[in-house]
Image (cartoon, rainbow over the protein chains, first blue to last red):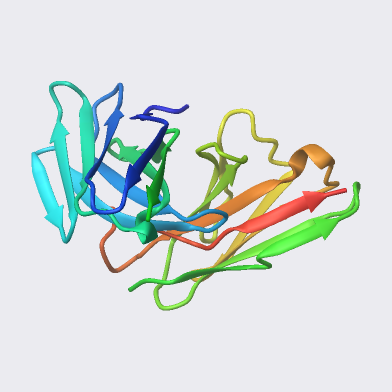
Length: 110
Length: 117
């Protein structure tokens, strides 16, 4: 069953702006991961944040996790046209499989 | 980094035929591989978990006799769509966990687009 819910479903911004995507989930998790998918392609792993972590950075990416609210956010700073893709969060509960959210389609306009 | 390949990348077949999709971990060993299905503009839905040397575990609602999974080695899992119908047309993606490495991360293949006429 689908647990993560991304918000917004679609986001369109200008190059150079920041993009924020949110993910909510329903059950306890071991970790939450963000993936990027270019149109018609496979998924690229972006970042993993564990349940005992609150924030992680990787280059222009910043991920936060609030387990009390069961939510996470992905911030892409100084966006580029090449960031145009769909972004998915995936949650993993102890010993169970990934559950993906519906995704956010990001369009970065040059 | 860990690389997962899929073959073929796209396939068109006639209704009633069977199609085999291969998923290979190229530079690592994977005891567990996963098969997902993705419809246009939708998220990935887990179909089954493929375990090397044992039977696959299917998610609720996925017909095991229609979607045959074989995980014969630590680097290869295959998904066979038997007696394919137009409603089976979809994007099929596999992923694998690195046996020796960072177990929490799944590495995804590039996907296989299946069109059943």
